[in-house]
Image (cartoon, one colour):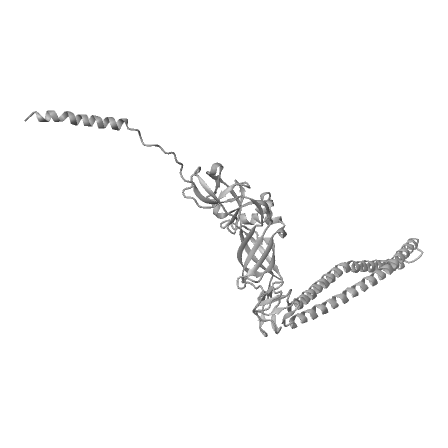
Length: 432
Protein backbone atom coordinates (compact mmCIF):
# COMPACT_ATOMS: atom_id res chain seq x y z
CA UNK A 1 0.00 0.00 0.00
CA UNK A 2 2.84 2.43 0.61
CA UNK A 3 4.37 1.89 -2.90
CA UNK A 4 1.35 3.36 -4.93
CA UNK A 5 2.45 7.07 -4.84
CA UNK A 6 5.78 6.17 -6.35
CA UNK A 7 4.05 4.64 -9.38
CA UNK A 8 1.82 7.81 -9.90
CA UNK A 9 4.68 10.42 -10.11
CA UNK A 10 6.16 9.61 -13.56
CA UNK A 11 2.93 10.29 -15.55
CA UNK A 12 2.50 13.72 -13.90
CA UNK A 13 6.06 14.77 -14.60
CA UNK A 14 5.72 13.55 -18.15
CA UNK A 15 2.59 15.69 -18.63
CA UNK A 16 4.31 18.79 -17.31
CA UNK A 17 7.28 18.31 -19.60
CA UNK A 18 5.03 17.88 -22.62
CA UNK A 19 3.11 21.08 -21.77
CA UNK A 20 6.34 23.08 -21.41
CA UNK A 21 7.59 21.78 -24.76
CA UNK A 22 4.32 22.67 -26.53
CA UNK A 23 4.29 26.21 -25.11
CA UNK A 24 7.90 26.92 -25.95
CA UNK A 25 7.66 25.58 -29.44
CA UNK A 26 4.32 27.26 -30.31
CA UNK A 27 4.52 30.23 -32.81
CA UNK A 28 3.93 33.79 -31.42
CA UNK A 29 0.93 36.05 -32.30
CA UNK A 30 0.98 37.76 -35.70
CA UNK A 31 2.21 41.48 -35.58
CA UNK A 32 -0.03 43.87 -37.54
CA UNK A 33 1.56 47.26 -38.48
CA UNK A 34 -0.96 50.21 -38.34
CA UNK A 35 -0.47 54.07 -38.09
CA UNK A 36 -2.44 56.38 -35.77
CA UNK A 37 -5.55 57.81 -37.48
CA UNK A 38 -5.15 61.35 -39.00
CA UNK A 39 -7.06 64.14 -37.20
CA UNK A 40 -9.50 66.02 -39.47
CA UNK A 41 -9.06 69.79 -39.21
CA UNK A 42 -10.32 72.84 -41.10
CA UNK A 43 -7.66 74.67 -43.09
CA UNK A 44 -7.37 77.71 -45.36
CA UNK A 45 -4.79 78.60 -47.97
CA UNK A 46 -2.88 81.78 -47.10
CA UNK A 47 -3.21 84.39 -49.82
CA UNK A 48 -2.47 88.08 -50.24
CA UNK A 49 -5.08 90.79 -50.45
CA UNK A 50 -5.49 94.54 -50.02
CA UNK A 51 -6.74 95.54 -46.59
CA UNK A 52 -7.35 99.01 -45.18
CA UNK A 53 -6.51 99.52 -41.49
CA UNK A 54 -9.61 100.55 -39.54
CA UNK A 55 -9.91 101.72 -35.94
CA UNK A 56 -13.14 102.47 -34.08
CA UNK A 57 -13.07 104.39 -30.79
CA UNK A 58 -15.51 106.35 -28.65
CA UNK A 59 -15.11 109.95 -27.58
CA UNK A 60 -16.94 113.03 -26.26
CA UNK A 61 -17.36 116.10 -28.43
CA UNK A 62 -16.23 119.56 -27.42
CA UNK A 63 -16.27 122.93 -29.13
CA UNK A 64 -13.21 123.66 -31.26
CA UNK A 65 -13.40 127.34 -30.21
CA UNK A 66 -14.60 128.75 -26.91
CA UNK A 67 -15.16 132.35 -25.87
CA UNK A 68 -14.95 133.72 -22.36
CA UNK A 69 -15.97 137.38 -22.26
CA UNK A 70 -14.27 139.26 -19.40
CA UNK A 71 -15.18 142.83 -18.40
CA UNK A 72 -12.18 145.11 -18.93
CA UNK A 73 -13.77 148.23 -17.45
CA UNK A 74 -15.87 148.91 -14.43
CA UNK A 75 -19.40 150.19 -14.67
CA UNK A 76 -23.09 149.46 -14.71
CA UNK A 77 -24.59 147.23 -17.41
CA UNK A 78 -27.06 149.54 -19.15
CA UNK A 79 -28.00 147.27 -22.09
CA UNK A 80 -28.16 143.52 -22.76
CA UNK A 81 -29.00 141.81 -26.03
CA UNK A 82 -32.40 140.08 -25.88
CA UNK A 83 -30.89 136.86 -27.32
CA UNK A 84 -28.11 136.73 -24.74
CA UNK A 85 -29.44 133.59 -23.05
CA UNK A 86 -27.90 130.13 -22.61
CA UNK A 87 -28.52 127.98 -25.66
CA UNK A 88 -29.12 130.84 -28.10
CA UNK A 89 -27.13 131.21 -31.33
CA UNK A 90 -25.62 134.66 -31.94
CA UNK A 91 -23.79 135.76 -35.13
CA UNK A 92 -20.28 137.16 -35.15
CA UNK A 93 -19.89 140.90 -34.47
CA UNK A 94 -23.12 141.20 -32.49
CA UNK A 95 -23.11 143.64 -29.56
CA UNK A 96 -24.37 141.67 -26.56
CA UNK A 97 -23.58 143.94 -23.58
CA UNK A 98 -23.02 147.67 -22.99
CA UNK A 99 -21.48 149.15 -19.86
CA UNK A 100 -22.20 152.75 -18.86
CA UNK A 101 -19.59 154.88 -20.72
CA UNK A 102 -20.21 158.19 -18.89
CA UNK A 103 -17.05 158.14 -16.75
CA UNK A 104 -14.87 157.30 -19.74
CA UNK A 105 -16.51 159.95 -21.93
CA UNK A 106 -15.71 162.54 -19.25
CA UNK A 107 -12.12 161.32 -19.03
CA UNK A 108 -11.88 161.57 -22.81
CA UNK A 109 -13.23 165.14 -22.81
CA UNK A 110 -10.78 166.20 -20.10
CA UNK A 111 -7.83 164.65 -21.91
CA UNK A 112 -8.84 166.32 -25.17
CA UNK A 113 -9.12 169.71 -23.41
CA UNK A 114 -5.67 169.24 -21.87
CA UNK A 115 -4.28 168.42 -25.28
CA UNK A 116 -5.75 171.61 -26.76
CA UNK A 117 -4.22 173.67 -23.96
CA UNK A 118 -0.78 172.14 -24.38
CA UNK A 119 -0.93 172.56 -28.15
CA UNK A 120 -1.79 176.24 -27.67
CA UNK A 121 1.10 176.62 -25.22
CA UNK A 122 3.41 174.96 -27.69
CA UNK A 123 2.31 177.34 -30.43
CA UNK A 124 2.79 180.31 -28.10
CA UNK A 125 6.29 179.11 -27.21
CA UNK A 126 7.18 178.76 -30.87
CA UNK A 127 6.07 182.34 -31.50
CA UNK A 128 8.02 183.53 -28.48
CA UNK A 129 11.14 181.78 -29.73
CA UNK A 130 10.80 183.45 -33.13
CA UNK A 131 10.30 186.89 -31.62
CA UNK A 132 13.18 186.48 -29.18
CA UNK A 133 15.52 185.40 -31.97
CA UNK A 134 14.55 188.43 -34.07
CA UNK A 135 15.02 190.89 -31.16
CA UNK A 136 18.33 189.21 -30.29
CA UNK A 137 19.54 189.81 -33.82
CA UNK A 138 18.64 193.52 -33.55
CA UNK A 139 20.29 193.89 -30.15
CA UNK A 140 23.47 192.27 -31.43
CA UNK A 141 23.57 194.82 -34.26
CA UNK A 142 23.05 197.62 -31.74
CA UNK A 143 25.84 196.20 -29.59
CA UNK A 144 28.19 196.29 -32.55
CA UNK A 145 27.38 199.96 -33.09
CA UNK A 146 27.74 200.74 -29.38
CA UNK A 147 31.13 199.06 -29.19
CA UNK A 148 32.32 200.94 -32.28
CA UNK A 149 31.06 204.22 -30.82
CA UNK A 150 32.77 203.42 -27.50
CA UNK A 151 36.07 202.75 -29.26
CA UNK A 152 35.89 206.08 -31.17
CA UNK A 153 34.93 208.09 -28.09
CA UNK A 154 37.64 206.45 -26.02
CA UNK A 155 40.20 207.47 -28.62
CA UNK A 156 38.95 211.05 -28.59
CA UNK A 157 38.91 211.11 -24.79
CA UNK A 158 42.52 209.91 -24.75
CA UNK A 159 43.36 212.85 -27.02
CA UNK A 160 41.37 215.08 -24.64
CA UNK A 161 39.22 216.15 -27.54
CA UNK A 162 36.04 215.33 -25.61
CA UNK A 163 35.25 215.18 -21.96
CA UNK A 164 35.68 212.06 -19.87
CA UNK A 165 31.98 212.11 -18.96
CA UNK A 166 31.11 211.55 -22.63
CA UNK A 167 33.36 208.53 -22.71
CA UNK A 168 31.73 207.19 -19.55
CA UNK A 169 28.27 207.54 -21.08
CA UNK A 170 29.38 205.62 -24.18
CA UNK A 171 30.76 202.82 -22.00
CA UNK A 172 27.53 202.58 -19.99
CA UNK A 173 25.52 202.35 -23.22
CA UNK A 174 27.78 199.56 -24.44
CA UNK A 175 27.45 197.61 -21.17
CA UNK A 176 23.67 197.96 -21.32
CA UNK A 177 23.63 196.61 -24.86
CA UNK A 178 25.78 193.68 -23.83
CA UNK A 179 23.44 192.93 -20.94
CA UNK A 180 20.39 193.01 -23.22
CA UNK A 181 22.05 190.61 -25.67
CA UNK A 182 22.99 188.23 -22.82
CA UNK A 183 19.44 188.25 -21.40
CA UNK A 184 17.95 187.51 -24.83
CA UNK A 185 20.44 184.68 -25.38
CA UNK A 186 19.51 183.22 -21.98
CA UNK A 187 15.82 183.47 -22.81
CA UNK A 188 16.38 181.73 -26.13
CA UNK A 189 18.41 178.96 -24.45
CA UNK A 190 15.52 178.22 -22.04
CA UNK A 191 13.03 177.66 -24.85
CA UNK A 192 14.15 174.04 -25.80
CA UNK A 193 13.58 172.68 -22.24
CA UNK A 194 10.19 174.38 -22.17
CA UNK A 195 9.41 172.81 -25.54
CA UNK A 196 10.46 169.37 -24.23
CA UNK A 197 8.20 169.78 -21.19
CA UNK A 198 5.24 170.78 -23.34
CA UNK A 199 5.95 167.87 -25.74
CA UNK A 200 5.87 165.45 -22.81
CA UNK A 201 2.60 166.93 -21.59
CA UNK A 202 1.13 166.60 -25.07
CA UNK A 203 2.23 162.95 -25.22
CA UNK A 204 0.68 162.31 -21.81
CA UNK A 205 -2.58 163.90 -22.94
CA UNK A 206 -2.58 161.82 -26.12
CA UNK A 207 -2.01 158.67 -24.03
CA UNK A 208 -4.92 159.66 -21.79
CA UNK A 209 -7.10 160.13 -24.88
CA UNK A 210 -6.06 156.72 -26.23
CA UNK A 211 -6.75 155.12 -22.85
CA UNK A 212 -10.17 156.76 -22.65
CA UNK A 213 -11.00 155.68 -26.21
CA UNK A 214 -9.91 152.13 -25.44
CA UNK A 215 -12.03 152.12 -22.30
CA UNK A 216 -14.98 153.41 -24.30
CA UNK A 217 -14.43 150.64 -26.84
CA UNK A 218 -14.48 148.07 -24.05
CA UNK A 219 -17.78 149.35 -22.72
CA UNK A 220 -19.33 147.37 -25.59
CA UNK A 221 -18.86 143.59 -25.71
CA UNK A 222 -19.26 141.99 -29.15
CA UNK A 223 -19.12 138.36 -30.24
CA UNK A 224 -15.86 137.46 -32.05
CA UNK A 225 -17.40 134.61 -34.11
CA UNK A 226 -20.65 132.74 -34.58
CA UNK A 227 -21.36 131.09 -31.26
CA UNK A 228 -23.79 129.41 -28.96
CA UNK A 229 -24.18 130.92 -25.49
CA UNK A 230 -23.52 128.57 -22.57
CA UNK A 231 -23.49 130.93 -19.58
CA UNK A 232 -24.40 134.57 -18.82
CA UNK A 233 -23.16 136.14 -15.57
CA UNK A 234 -24.24 139.78 -16.05
CA UNK A 235 -27.68 141.31 -15.69
CA UNK A 236 -28.95 144.75 -16.60
CA UNK A 237 -28.29 147.41 -13.92
CA UNK A 238 -25.60 145.18 -12.41
CA UNK A 239 -22.17 146.72 -11.81
CA UNK A 240 -19.31 144.67 -13.21
CA UNK A 241 -15.64 144.92 -12.31
CA UNK A 242 -12.54 144.47 -14.47
CA UNK A 243 -11.63 140.79 -14.77
CA UNK A 244 -15.18 139.57 -14.10
CA UNK A 245 -16.43 136.84 -16.47
CA UNK A 246 -19.72 137.97 -17.96
CA UNK A 247 -20.38 135.52 -20.85
CA UNK A 248 -19.22 132.05 -21.84
CA UNK A 249 -19.95 130.58 -25.26
CA UNK A 250 -18.85 127.93 -27.76
CA UNK A 251 -18.09 128.50 -31.40
CA UNK A 252 -20.33 126.71 -33.88
CA UNK A 253 -17.93 126.67 -36.85
CA UNK A 254 -16.31 123.41 -35.77
CA UNK A 255 -16.50 120.69 -33.14
CA UNK A 256 -13.69 118.41 -32.05
CA UNK A 257 -13.14 115.21 -30.12
CA UNK A 258 -10.01 113.63 -28.69
CA UNK A 259 -9.66 109.99 -29.79
CA UNK A 260 -7.21 107.91 -27.77
CA UNK A 261 -5.71 105.44 -30.25
CA UNK A 262 -3.36 102.59 -29.29
CA UNK A 263 0.16 103.43 -30.43
CA UNK A 264 0.49 100.36 -32.66
CA UNK A 265 -2.91 100.97 -34.24
CA UNK A 266 -2.03 104.62 -34.79
CA UNK A 267 1.13 103.64 -36.62
CA UNK A 268 -0.83 101.13 -38.69
CA UNK A 269 -3.02 103.89 -40.11
CA UNK A 270 -0.10 105.18 -42.15
CA UNK A 271 0.66 101.99 -44.04
CA UNK A 272 4.21 101.31 -45.14
CA UNK A 273 5.48 104.69 -43.89
CA UNK A 274 4.92 103.59 -40.29
CA UNK A 275 8.07 101.45 -40.49
CA UNK A 276 10.31 104.40 -41.40
CA UNK A 277 8.91 107.18 -39.23
CA UNK A 278 8.62 107.40 -35.45
CA UNK A 279 5.48 108.19 -33.53
CA UNK A 280 6.97 111.54 -32.44
CA UNK A 281 7.61 112.45 -36.09
CA UNK A 282 4.05 111.46 -36.94
CA UNK A 283 2.79 113.76 -34.21
CA UNK A 284 4.88 116.64 -35.51
CA UNK A 285 4.74 116.48 -39.30
CA UNK A 286 2.65 113.58 -40.58
CA UNK A 287 0.22 114.39 -43.43
CA UNK A 288 -2.99 113.34 -41.72
CA UNK A 289 -4.98 113.87 -44.93
CA UNK A 290 -4.22 110.28 -45.95
CA UNK A 291 -6.45 109.02 -43.13
CA UNK A 292 -10.22 109.13 -43.70
CA UNK A 293 -12.32 109.82 -40.62
CA UNK A 294 -16.07 109.67 -40.05
CA UNK A 295 -18.09 109.76 -36.86
CA UNK A 296 -21.65 109.12 -35.76
CA UNK A 297 -23.51 110.03 -32.55
CA UNK A 298 -24.35 107.33 -30.04
CA UNK A 299 -27.91 108.62 -29.96
CA UNK A 300 -28.35 108.04 -33.71
CA UNK A 301 -25.71 105.81 -35.38
CA UNK A 302 -27.38 106.35 -38.76
CA UNK A 303 -26.03 109.91 -38.86
CA UNK A 304 -22.61 110.01 -40.53
CA UNK A 305 -20.40 113.09 -40.31
CA UNK A 306 -17.19 113.60 -42.25
CA UNK A 307 -14.24 114.61 -40.09
CA UNK A 308 -10.52 115.17 -40.30
CA UNK A 309 -7.48 114.78 -38.09
CA UNK A 310 -6.41 118.22 -36.94
CA UNK A 311 -3.44 117.48 -34.72
CA UNK A 312 -2.03 115.23 -32.04
CA UNK A 313 -2.03 116.63 -28.52
CA UNK A 314 1.27 117.23 -26.81
CA UNK A 315 1.77 114.11 -24.66
CA UNK A 316 1.26 110.39 -25.10
CA UNK A 317 -0.51 108.44 -22.37
CA UNK A 318 2.40 106.28 -21.22
CA UNK A 319 0.24 104.16 -18.92
CA UNK A 320 -2.42 103.32 -21.50
CA UNK A 321 0.07 103.52 -24.43
CA UNK A 322 -2.31 105.64 -26.47
CA UNK A 323 -1.96 108.64 -28.78
CA UNK A 324 -4.42 111.55 -28.22
CA UNK A 325 -5.58 112.38 -31.75
CA UNK A 326 -7.78 115.48 -32.16
CA UNK A 327 -10.51 115.02 -34.76
CA UNK A 328 -12.38 118.06 -36.09
CA UNK A 329 -15.83 118.22 -37.68
CA UNK A 330 -16.46 121.38 -39.69
CA UNK A 331 -19.90 123.01 -39.54
CA UNK A 332 -21.43 120.70 -36.89
CA UNK A 333 -24.81 122.44 -37.23
CA UNK A 334 -25.12 121.81 -40.99
CA UNK A 335 -28.41 120.15 -41.86
CA UNK A 336 -29.53 120.09 -38.24
CA UNK A 337 -33.26 119.42 -37.97
CA UNK A 338 -34.10 118.35 -34.42
CA UNK A 339 -35.24 115.86 -33.41
CA UNK A 340 -34.68 113.88 -36.63
CA UNK A 341 -31.11 115.18 -37.06
CA UNK A 342 -29.35 116.70 -34.08
CA UNK A 343 -26.36 119.03 -34.36
CA UNK A 344 -23.05 117.94 -32.93
CA UNK A 345 -22.90 119.69 -29.58
CA UNK A 346 -20.38 119.50 -26.72
CA UNK A 347 -20.47 116.41 -24.47
CA UNK A 348 -22.22 114.32 -27.14
CA UNK A 349 -20.74 110.81 -27.25
CA UNK A 350 -19.72 109.72 -30.74
CA UNK A 351 -18.12 106.74 -32.47
CA UNK A 352 -15.06 107.73 -34.52
CA UNK A 353 -13.92 105.48 -37.37
CA UNK A 354 -10.43 105.85 -38.87
CA UNK A 355 -9.45 104.31 -42.20
CA UNK A 356 -5.76 104.47 -43.01
CA UNK A 357 -3.52 103.79 -45.97
CA UNK A 358 -4.33 100.43 -47.67
CA UNK A 359 -1.86 97.60 -47.07
CA UNK A 360 -1.06 95.87 -50.36
CA UNK A 361 -0.03 92.20 -50.67
CA UNK A 362 -0.99 91.61 -47.04
CA UNK A 363 -1.27 88.03 -45.77
CA UNK A 364 -4.55 88.05 -43.83
CA UNK A 365 -5.70 85.22 -41.52
CA UNK A 366 -8.57 84.73 -39.09
CA UNK A 367 -7.65 85.71 -35.57
CA UNK A 368 -8.49 82.16 -34.45
CA UNK A 369 -5.42 80.92 -36.36
CA UNK A 370 -3.10 82.65 -33.90
CA UNK A 371 -2.17 80.78 -30.72
CA UNK A 372 0.30 82.51 -28.44
CA UNK A 373 2.34 84.00 -31.28
CA UNK A 374 2.29 80.73 -33.23
CA UNK A 375 0.33 79.64 -36.31
CA UNK A 376 -0.37 75.95 -37.03
CA UNK A 377 0.52 74.97 -40.57
CA UNK A 378 -0.20 71.76 -42.47
CA UNK A 379 3.26 70.82 -43.65
CA UNK A 380 4.76 68.18 -45.93
CA UNK A 381 3.07 64.79 -45.72
CA UNK A 382 0.07 66.20 -43.90
CA UNK A 383 2.01 66.69 -40.67
CA UNK A 384 1.49 69.57 -38.24
CA UNK A 385 4.04 72.40 -38.04
CA UNK A 386 4.12 75.25 -35.50
CA UNK A 387 5.46 78.54 -36.89
CA UNK A 388 6.23 81.72 -34.94
CA UNK A 389 4.79 84.81 -36.64
CA UNK A 390 4.74 88.60 -36.17
CA UNK A 391 1.42 90.41 -36.49
CA UNK A 392 1.32 93.80 -38.23
CA UNK A 393 -2.36 94.56 -37.68
CA UNK A 394 -5.36 93.09 -35.90
CA UNK A 395 -8.89 94.24 -36.61
CA UNK A 396 -12.41 92.88 -36.89
CA UNK A 397 -11.39 89.32 -36.04
CA UNK A 398 -8.63 89.22 -38.67
CA UNK A 399 -4.87 89.62 -38.43
CA UNK A 400 -2.26 90.76 -40.94
CA UNK A 401 0.89 88.64 -40.79
CA UNK A 402 4.09 90.61 -41.22
CA UNK A 403 6.45 87.65 -41.11
CA UNK A 404 6.27 83.85 -40.74
CA UNK A 405 3.57 82.88 -43.25
CA UNK A 406 3.91 82.94 -47.02
CA UNK A 407 1.15 82.92 -49.64
CA UNK A 408 0.19 79.34 -50.42
CA UNK A 409 0.82 77.96 -46.93
CA UNK A 410 -1.97 75.72 -45.57
CA UNK A 411 -3.04 77.22 -42.24
CA UNK A 412 -5.00 75.28 -39.61
CA UNK A 413 -7.82 77.35 -38.14
CA UNK A 414 -9.18 74.73 -35.71
CA UNK A 415 -8.00 74.56 -32.15
CA UNK A 416 -6.04 71.34 -31.56
CA UNK A 417 -5.39 70.12 -28.05
CA UNK A 418 -2.71 69.07 -27.66
CA UNK A 419 -0.97 70.49 -30.75
CA UNK A 420 2.07 68.26 -31.20
CA UNK A 421 4.44 68.99 -34.10
CA UNK A 422 4.49 66.09 -36.55
CA UNK A 423 1.01 64.76 -35.77
CA UNK A 424 -0.97 63.62 -38.81
CA UNK A 425 -3.81 65.81 -40.02
CA UNK A 426 -6.56 65.49 -42.58
CA UNK A 427 -7.29 68.85 -44.24
CA UNK A 428 -10.81 70.10 -44.75
CA UNK A 429 -10.54 73.18 -46.98
CA UNK A 430 -12.73 76.16 -46.10
CA UNK A 431 -12.90 79.65 -47.58
CA UNK A 432 -12.22 82.88 -45.70
